[in-house]
Image (tube, rainbow, N blue to C red; front, side, top):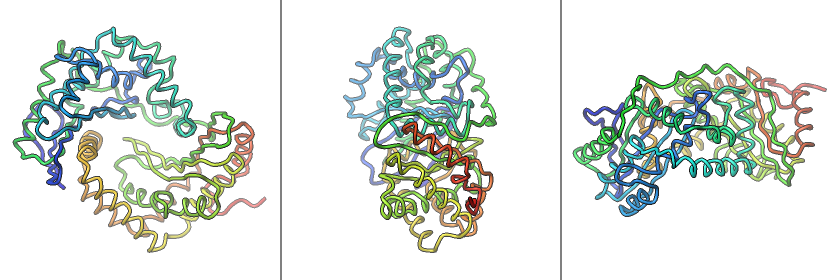
Amino acid sequence: IRSRALRGGSLKSSVFIHTPAARSVAIAIAIGAGSRHERPSERGAAHLLEHLCFRGIPGAENSAALAHAMESLGATSNAGTDRESTIYWIHVPQAVAVEAARLIGAVALAPLLHPEHMRIERQIVIEEIRSYDDDPSEQAGTALDRALFGVHALGREIAGRPAEVRALRHEAVARFHARTYTPAATTLAIAGDLTLADAEAVARAVRASLGAQAAPPRTVSGRTALTRVSARGEGIVAKIRDGEQAQFALGLPALRREDPDAPALELLSTILGDGSASRLFLELREERGLVYDISASSVEYADAGAFIVAGGADPSKVIPALQLVTAALRRLAREVPSEGEIERARAYLAGRLERAADDPRGLAEWHASQRLLRRSPQELPDLLAEIMRVRPADLLRVARRLVKVGGFRVGLSAPRTTVAALRRAAARGDLDPSLLQPRTR
């Protein structure tokens, strides 16, 4: 699958992906406006704005009218806010792609943003935040973000805190939209069985939304500058929660988005904890029964990243589980994985990419993000080729990069006694993967 650039237009990038088997079309609009771009007085604005954009557009003045217009096309649509971007998407039958493009383009680029919409949507967002606060795995992940990045924007909750959302004024959210939702910070991707002429018609419908803005923003010179990632939190951040299961997330500072070693880290993550044949899943769950679930993954930003192992266990088994995770990280830094493990991981990742190629919505979102966030956008075949070129020595080098700094962090949602025991274990060095051999007592 190869993308084709569309000619002209004021958006940063437009992409057409031809998927012959597809009978539907997915349109994704990625905007470089995430929680990381918020000013101190705007915390929570990026996520609240995503909600408000679906409250009304020219010709569909409220959320009910907009939902009716979309569903009358047979469409599904939604959006998601991250730290460095927000993505709006719509997935429709091919015959109505142009009309769908007009709707989702107006949602993202020309929403009405009426002040009266804030009252209801603010409370909806607060309830969403509360639902995250009641989810132990979310609690552990949020705690790990704070442990890794401290008070930096990458360490804060994407949606903000309830008090921050309550404090947001309509004027602040409107200014955030005007400052960050600019053509230069917007990319468009279209995925489906379309001709180039069809795709250009869809792109024109999205671009027309720029002319539908009632009052063009007076300042469109750029986004808020990103603050450097320098703050670090404490080693363990915990949410005290009584219960019969604890959630944990161990993280190490890792690679930025376009680090040359990123493909090797992806393969390393798959070997360690991605899939039911990965090392951690087999040892901690299948062989020892210490955890219900466990996984390894990486997160990448423009100038920072993290390698994360997350899982859930009985509170009494959290420390043994994390000690085995630490031992597994040490092993990765000491010896090259077997040929069988490497081939399993490559095949697993290749299968995931092949399946992604059959999903128009996933393709559209992926390509829009690529062209928004990367200086050198990737195609799916290019990504697969990079993974296939990773050598065993590359895996060993990347594993040593991860563990040598001794910067492990832990996020936890667990009873107080478990948290105290974990702090003692960390003080002894039991959880420090930078020690290639465990400390003797």
